Image (cartoon, rainbow, N blue to C red; front, top):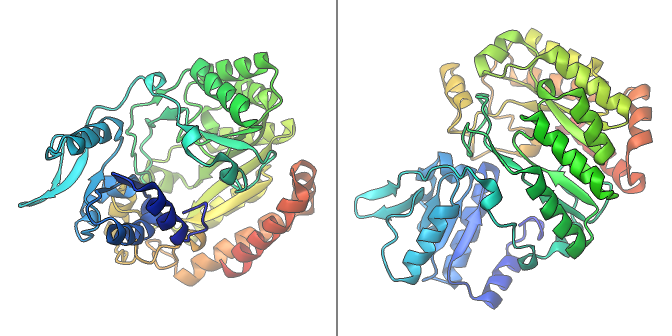
Length: 423
């Protein structure tokens, strides 16, 4: 869908040409309505072809597929082993009822098989089959976070799981941290550079830097290769776990941009949401990254269940004093299956529109579990964007580091207008 800008017809045309035996669709909550529409339209073309949907949404809302007859099977959590079992059962004409993590219907209703153990040896997994996707087409799109240094980029996942228990996380990969070795990551990079002339790697882990020694080893291996590559980390860095040595080595290895999620600076909200972060250490690492010449993005969240206007203003004030180049101010979204959803229920929020009316770009103004009115939340968020970006010193620093200025500056400007005026 991303390649086709949300248009379904090119996907349907490709499916007609390919004539699949099984169709798999991955969807997060924001994508699920589109996955449902796509499934229904594919089923009209291929009425006997099994359609399987996986991803975060089916993991935490398996019942969501019950009212969609076009979807034959679902998977919850990691599905590498289960999906192979499903395919083997379908190929052998057997009823696929034994696959771990499988969601399916029988005469008694919706069934959900027990989960498979999490994969512990991530190095044992093969690299993605890049030859089966249109790499050139993806290079025409902006990478996650849309700021890029090189057009020819590749996304990497180097770990799974997170031991922390933040209330707003789905924990699709569990709380046991599993990771690829630095040597394994570099081998994949090497293959991508050789086959596709990749110049930038975007690392999309939930938590990249839990183990400083792994980060240091990866940076040292990249430096030993003497590659002229760029590293972009728009997710997965926990600022209060970052070490100065790791940050300096990553910068030398090519990291020109990173994100640190501070989220909230209220001690009460941190305790409520189990988001225990050392704010002062985070600010120190943000300052060090800034001073090294790394473009630093920060994310902040307001509108948590029971949050007061004073607490939200405190978080915004911290963002304004941080040495960040860019920042995003989100509203707390209580997704089904998260502890935040329960907290919002307990706070008396109306969650009936939590998924049906969700708009990622507007952070779903229909949901509000805080002690503030919607009008107050909207005003605080818009003013945060205005005050953050209407800083000559910040804009001068951003302009100095921003790559591809002629392409990215107009996009950044229109994004700021949307967030500061209409968002």
